Image (cartoon, rainbow, N blue to C red; front, side, top):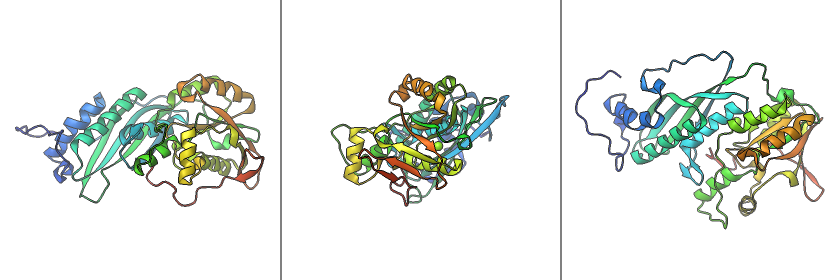
Length: 349
Ligand code: MG
């Protein structure tokens, strides 16, 4: 970014809006970077303003993940697209046992988008990244014409380091293993939906958007190698990851409905809207599968962490050639928890 310096007024962040020049690669793009993104993400890699970040390679294996964020609305109870994009990326690294290190971020911004909102989102991302101990080391901004996007879309790619000898994954799950859920499900989806549909509840529901790497390292330390697999229960909810586990591990699961924590307000909202909390997205919850002999220690470690205080053992893996996820209901009955068909809640994350 070696350009001629000449006088230009600073961005009018209070009242200004994104226009096509901000995506031109010229002076306006540089100004957007210098006045919004650079201060928000401040770190030595980004400050070099090169086309790439040059990073030291850790001695161990790398985990890489990428995610597009298209949530609407952009600001919701308990978070916004900026912090969500960091937490989602950190969580996808963390559930593989990786320590999150660096993030790359690509922004697609709609012409006319308020600069104040863009700054709020960038600041929220920067703050979330600092709290997670990661830095946004490189990025990209593109602007598309009015009506060709919805405000802002963010794609994040994360890199983390995986300790030697750690192998987590569905392939390690065996019949008899326990399923441990880190807390109540459905908060994120219901928070988004209530804002979108203008619903109000007696007890307001906030997104659970949170970074899980701290919880995961506490769990790994307590497990003595007994954790088989972990996934964060995002889009598609707990139902989706249980079916993914069943498919990949070639076995079934039995879940105990009474043991699955759901907040009363989320339950009430789900009843009102005719949706099943098992399918509702979360942004700060994981389901771990642990060897039976390690389950109690893992559960105790989770309950000792603020993001796992309401953790519970909610079921177990069973031999099943059909790879069914069965929910045993409070009435002594049972039903199969199938994959979600269609899209119950589009643009939830
Ligand atoms: Mg995930």
